[in-house]
Image (tube, rainbow, N blue to C red; front, side, top):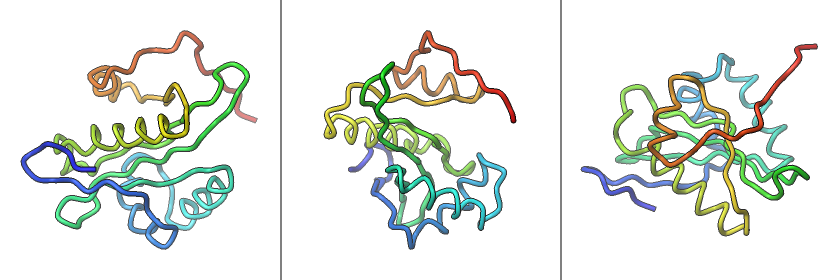
Length: 143
């Protein structure tokens, strides 16, 4: 998949051997050290979690972490756990291209929706990509 920007983007799944390359980008979103990031990604992979990378001129500039989910409330859908583009590459089209990849992947799995949790500062980006607020708020209790 290639984005229509001034330079082309290569969007592809990362093999587990490449996950460490994603850490500097993921660390811009998640306050984890590399060992904890790899532990969590491996654990989540047992439930279908995958990392997909956006490469520009062979350099990894963005990452999306996604997983298939099946719930009574939402049915079969793709959940985006992580989407981050390197701070210096924002505006390159990588975020858009990664979301397009996730949406195509969901359609290929016969899923009808993509869900994600958005940080306040990213809401405008997602709205521009035609994402809307879901009426069911997420809540949590720290144990």
